[in-house]
Length: 319
Image 1 (cartoon, rainbow, N blue to C red):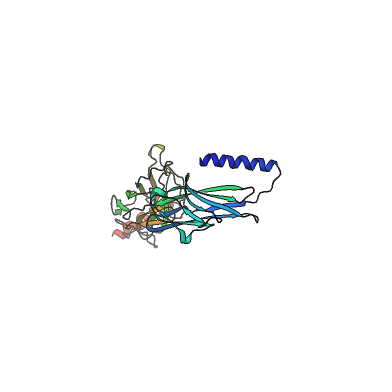
Image 2 (cartoon, rainbow, N blue to C red; image 1 turned 90 degrees about the horizontal axis):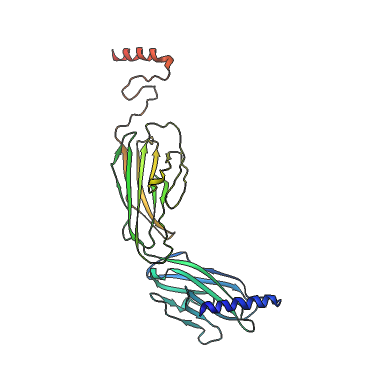
């Protein structure tokens, strides 16, 4: 019935334009939060702005998908009318001809919301706009991080896992190395609104370089998103096509011999929670001396031309 009504409106507009008419309804736009938290007391304000060009307003109608839940008709008393919206209610004290406030939201109210504006007689110009809204059920606990070992030697590969409890929609996982945001595993958004809670998981492999041969940038590839973060001290390589779920990074050993690793669960811009950080230290660091000696005190040779001289110096040092 609603679809047929909208088809009739479109046909009427076309005929009116062919007749050389001037529209009295212009610049219709809708403002809907992309995401809000679920729960008692949580709310969302949906706004509709328009220009009637001095024409009178006939009605404002709000729909969730194809179901009308709020109507404002200024010529009626009272001007507002509310229809059942399962799992939520309309706050009439903050709803009028420009906005509607929905309270006590749950995730089954996620979906497309539409505002339909109609000018008054004689033409009853009508237009409609829609926008999506997601009602978020966040995870109950912080992300859980585990790592293969809490220390490293140069040349090692460390393996870390980050898991997040079920939520709606499934969270994204961001990896933090020291204070650097290095990569993100993005959860797929289901096209159909099944409203199921889903957990999230991300796997990371960190390869420790033997020495700092050169500075490296960052590249990133995942099954769902390609994203890059540039940094001076961390780098990671593109994983094989058959193993996209593993993020692989190359780490230049930091001067301090230690670094921290953590992961953060995020859902849109309304939820972010970080798990406990793990401090990872080098097993037996061997810093180079400014005098040209290694940690044992033996002189270090820097060129083939000085090989014999270094050998003699080492022999003298041993005596």
